[in-house]
Image 1 (tube, rainbow, N blue to C red):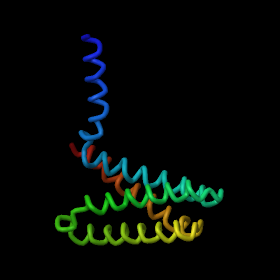
Image 2: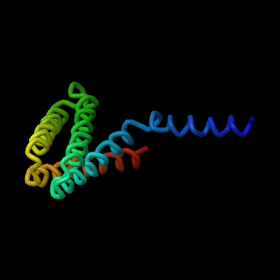
Image 3: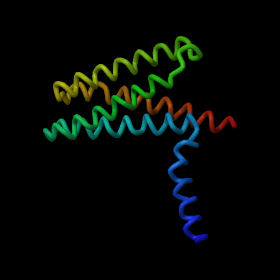
Length: 131
């Protein structure tokens, strides 16, 4: 009995650990995911795997929608506004890439996505270093 209770507690902990991740960690997980899925999507376009391309581009898009909803423009001011424009640009280009199954568009936006990841990564390291 005790063993089961412990096992369940551990599973509960595991499933909740994502809820306890800090906002910074979640941001990092999101932008890492966006980088990964966009590259899988581009490769699927190259491989003519339409379904896989679609799924991964939609995943990438959803991550940017999530990033857009968590971006506090009222607090972030001009910096946040320009970031929002980049997010909007990327989601729009992801839609185009998905409709046209365009490797060219993916080659254009993946470096942008990587830049965002690197920027957040730097900010995350700094915020951890300052604590």
